[in-house]
Image 1 (cartoon, helix red, strand yellow):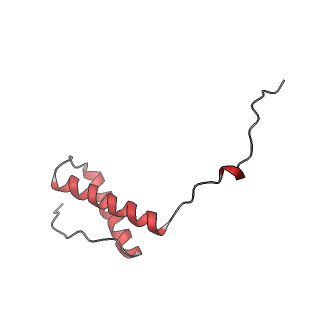
Image 2: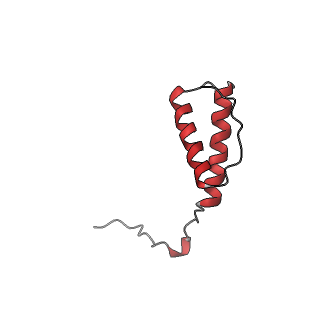
Image 3: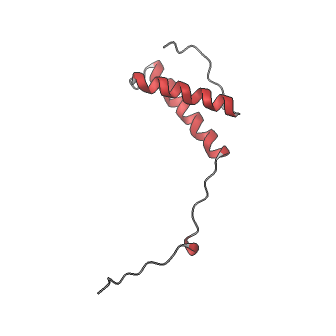
Length: 75
């Protein structure tokens, strides 16, 4: 797979889907670390991770809202 295409920030859903598709193709070839393909996979994964963190934020659960667990065992 040629790796000459320019990598750009992921700013919208179409760019996100395109990056995911390319990541899938690259992962199937299992590129070695430090190769152009391996570096491209690493950069694309980092960009996807950043886009997902911005677009699909996940709040941590509130510990005060969790149900307390009993530490005693039933007899």
